[in-house]
Image (cartoon, rainbow, N blue to C red; front, side):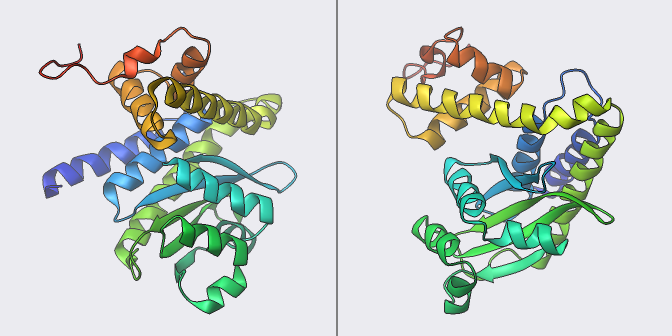
Length: 252
């Protein structure tokens, strides 16, 4: 990415993360945009996001790939991993080498799952404003020693902007809506998972490939990813709309 293009992308990222008062705000779509920006701007393989619910439990909300989703679910299920430690300690988790025996002792089931998925390094960044932590971002890389300080600093700046955007949106809504925001996010996540499964089955492709086609289609049509996935599940958008065009032709 050229420097001018990178600067433009960075400016757009911060503008989008600040714009949470528009109609039709969806937490999952907003956090999905955060993961998209991080993947494009940082030296990172994949990203996952967990949030803290009203009972102070971690909830797997979104991720940039199906594999990252599974690793976030592992952390939530077994109550171990960098995101949990990040939220409890209210501090970022510096890059950790997953090949080290001490790490396997610290997070045995998470480390085993992450290594099986091909990852060698992980870090976590808090979604935090002063003393309030509302979630955490996991950054994964396949290379040992990756996730450099510059990437972590920029990643934390993006996470801070997202946190302010989410809290700003919550303050602009009444108490009942704020209480239901995370449940809405979970419902959106379920719709996305269902659409990935349905599209993957119909086209005979892997979940990650299905998600990428959904994401690209939603961006091209300038529509919410959540709304698109609901339409796919309900059969309003056929699987053929996501199939590659015939050779030599471009999709209209």
